[in-house]
Image (cartoon, rainbow, N blue to C red; front, side):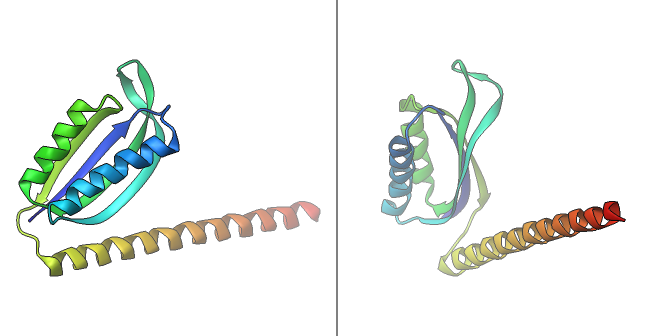
Amino acid sequence: MRHYETTYILRPNLGEDQLTEIIDRTNAIITNDAGAIICLDRWGVKRLAYEINKETQGYYVYLNYAAPGSTVTEIERIFKIDDRVLRYLTVKLGDAMNAETIEAEKQRIAEKAAAAVALSEDAEVDEFDSEALEDESTED
């Protein structure tokens, strides 16, 4: 198996059911071909850098996975057919992945996400403390 990441942009006016259906179908293609999903992030609706098919916004989905090369071909074939997918990009990150490297990659991503959450919580506490200090200084 090889290590890939695919980012795809869906039409923003789709309902939650349709978004979930497209994401689940993509995940099923990977798992049915003996692949493994390492990370799935729904980035949500973001403004596009330029207009694509008369759309100025898109729903971004990031998928990090390990699968054989034929799986990528099938995913991209489905994306080309489906009008609800505006754009997609698949990048090969590595050639050989086994079960141990997949688990190590999942662990690395989980640690990275935990660190990001901790940083954002620290930033919120610092912001709260600075607001409290400003309030105290204006009272005097």
